[in-house]
Length: 269
Ligand SMILES: Nc1ncnc2c1ncn2[C@@H]1O[C@H](COP(=O)(O)OP(=O)(O)OP(=O)(O)O)[C@@H](O)[C@H]1O
Image 1 (cartoon, rainbow, N blue to C red):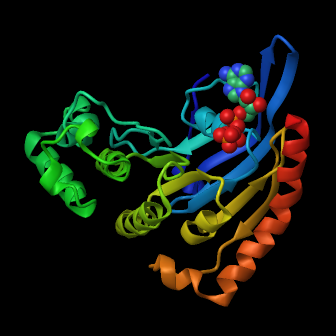
Image 2: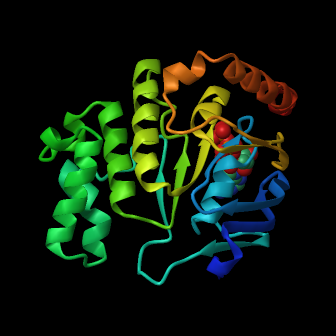
């Protein structure tokens, strides 16, 4: 099933209605994502938090067109510029191990036949913004995990998609690297204001990065609550986390998430 194009006059970048996904396994049929509806305007940094197994990745994969949907609709606004609809960044390595940093970052643009001079300018810009210029000729195995995720970020932004889909991109990183990459992503995002859907397990990450947070229920994954994040941009990660209002919002979201995490644990037991 193809995702449909959305009329740009509607003001929505992504509109999802009644999205549902059932999987069938040996044990029978179960509902992974249940009747999720979303209306996300262009330029929103939209976060999805929920307990393990609640269908976050399945939801993102349906938006990326990598997973069919059982019912419901997905509409995404597209310009007529030939840009890709989406770029994805995963938790693990989403870059090609046999390509240099430069070639990884340039991949999407080359595939689209973008003129060489434009590729040079765009890739040079994003390698600079991610601190990778010196490593342009390196291969992924020569880089740390944090640097490999920077390559993914550079590639995704260089690709200039309509929307960016991120599935726990920093969850495998240590705390220091995670904080650094969150700050870098915020800085790069501020320049482009792309529409982002970002999955995380971390309430802190959701509040630090997002404009709006959807908390999902334990399986079957439904939209439990939508919470606006009122903090101004540009954001400084550490300064933001020191603010009392930040702690209050984290607490409020945890309150909503706690019973879902407990419910998910009971399902697993
Ligand atoms: N291809 C598949 N076939 C059968 N079941 C699947 C498939 N993909 C996912 N599932 C199941 O659907 C449910 C939701 O999975 P999903 O990966 O979307 O959850 P998640 O919220 O992203 O989990 P986590 O936070 O642990 O990554 C899980 O029970 C998972 O086992």
